[in-house]
Image (cartoon, rainbow, N blue to C red; front, side, top):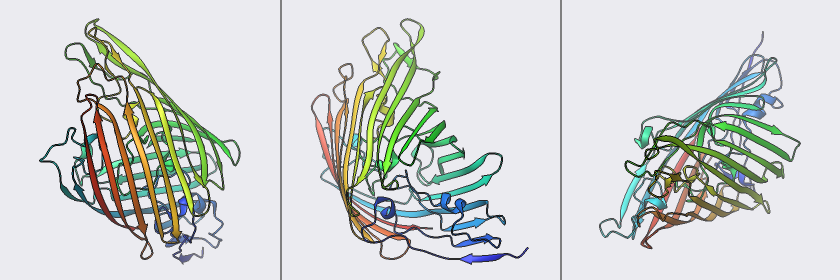
Length: 425
């Protein structure tokens, strides 16, 4: 059978482009396609490969290298980016590679006022296989890594996402159904706003489009928990009930704008050593999130989440022991309430240059049973600019301000300048 090789590069950014188009310096067309005597530009498999709706600013976009089978029904994309950052903290630091307001010393410490760092561990590599099978319909297989390593060991390979999607059902590790990636404002900072819901879980998810505007999703997800326990009173045990998130979304402008209402249910198990029995506390959360392209140049991002026992889903509180905390001397643990809010604006100056600014706050309630150094709230302010000097390359600069306030009213703050260069492949 006669074959032909199609080689091409393309640029899909223009002045006044919307958020989905300005996330990376450009969106490339396939570099290499191996196929039969058929038109590839209208191929549904290729369109699925280049779908960008719902992605976070830092997620890789279209792969630069694309291979197709001879029947044009299966495509394999290989892509990612190399990202190098440099940061300087002044007048107080966030004791982390990322600008985590929870890691700002409070009260301020005179020996922790300045810091210089460089990092390339957030570079990404991914493989994406999409196809159409007569038995299962449309399918996607996706694997994504970075170099943050297990437990934060820098430059060791780390699995970020790995899933199989068959029609409307997804199996594997992916962004939690409770997290709205597209509602996250652009930052160089890897972690992002303090009050943002940001979590990846292993899950079984069902997602259904009702029509071109409405969609919903629900999933059962592997729980992860972080407790503060009283010695000899209680202890963490294996979880018995999965996390259950769901959302309902309305979108318009071909997916460039949306509003989403999300909910989360958790049943957090622990061992009450005083009563010598296993118990659980109920956690729940609700979130309103989305993005609105007011004009082709201006996009607004927003998130507002509130609930209890879901601290591990919030950027500032994840892994800090605030899913459950002690409640008295009887070995009981309780789920404290928490609030996370994010608001940001992006302005597209022209096809290869945009600026943005965002504010976020994360707040924890019900800390009376903890000591005075317990986290109360943190503010996160960011302003940045991104420029694409040439195809596939993006540079950026960013100013960050953050503060941490403790329950005993002590506080600390930090300022950071970030710079970035990123090349997409």
